[in-house]
Length: 172
Image (cartoon, rainbow, N blue to C red; front, side):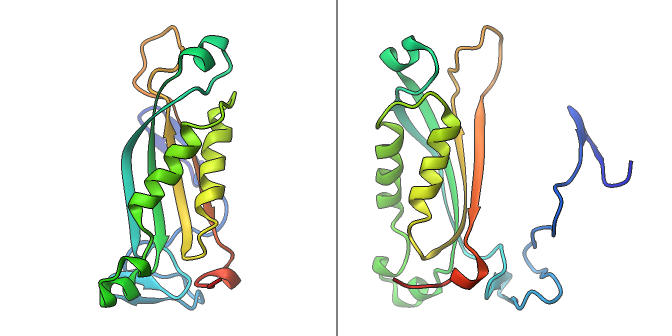
């Protein structure tokens, strides 16, 4: 059972490919440098902006009553971006404005109804990644009131995007 780990609910096998670097560690040959605990120059993690628990009313689901009545969705975002310029300038124009980010996400979730929350979370990720300052992101879309006839805590779908190394730090 090489590579498999037991978690309380199931066996888990790490995904194939290189493991993500953790703060203070960099893969050999990655060309990244650790600066104050953050990985710079193409590695992750590094500076990040997190928006957690954004509550939005939307009309997504495969059932007619979900589209008709709607329900609350919750969004968590983590963006990896280099905000060292903003830290030096103290100017919001030099970073990702999380207020504008929230409005962008709200427009998608509250917008056109979709059957699948997988579609909604993918639309959020693709739209947010249009900002070339963002190196990578993870989006979690929670559907806490999904029509499941059993007791459950949450339904969530998770997607991530990472800009190709040759596009990181690119400017328009």
